[in-house]
Image (cartoon, rainbow, N blue to C red; front, side, top):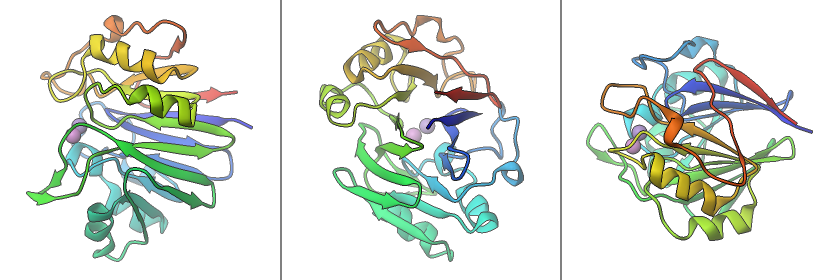
Length: 222
Ligand code: NI
Ligand code: MN
C-alpha cells in the first residue's frame, strides 16, 4: 500500500496507487510554474476544492479527455455536469465512496466563484486511496477545527497553502499543520506569481516531516 504524489505546481496534485489516479485542482494552462500540460494528465477522478480559476483550472478538458468523474461542491458539480461530465456532488460533512476509496469535503475559510458565478462553499478535501489519506486544505485561513478534522481523519499527508495574501502565510500555515498533525506536510499555493510568497523556509511545523516538492516532481509515499 502506498501512493505516488505528483505536484503539478500551485495547488494541483496527482495521487496514484498504481491502479487509480486522482487529480486535485489541476490548473496547468496559464500556470507559469507548470511543467505538464492537460494532455499529460491521465486520471479517473478529479477533486475540485473550490471554483476559482487557479483550482478549477483544466478540470473540464481533463475530465472530457479521460472520461473522469469530478468530485466537488454541489454548485461546481452542476457547473461541470452541465458540460456533459460525470459528477459526484458533495459538501462539507459527507463522505463519498469511490472506486479508489473515498472523498470527504471539509470546511475552508475562503470564497468560491467561477466567471462571476457562485460555486458553493469553498472546501478542503480528504482523499483516501492506496491505504493513504491525503488532506488538501484548499484555499483557507487558519481555523481551530483543523484540530478536530485531524483527529477524525488522521491524514497521513497534508497539502497546506503557505503563499499568504489569499490564504495562510507560513506562520499561520505552520500553526495549521501543528493542529492537523499529519505525518508529512507539503507546502503549496506559493511562488506561482509575484503576489504570492516565494520561499517555503518559514514553514516550520514541529512533529512532522516537511516535504517540499518542485512542480513536476513525483514523490513515493510508503
Ligand atoms: Ni481561491
Ligand atoms: Mn487559489
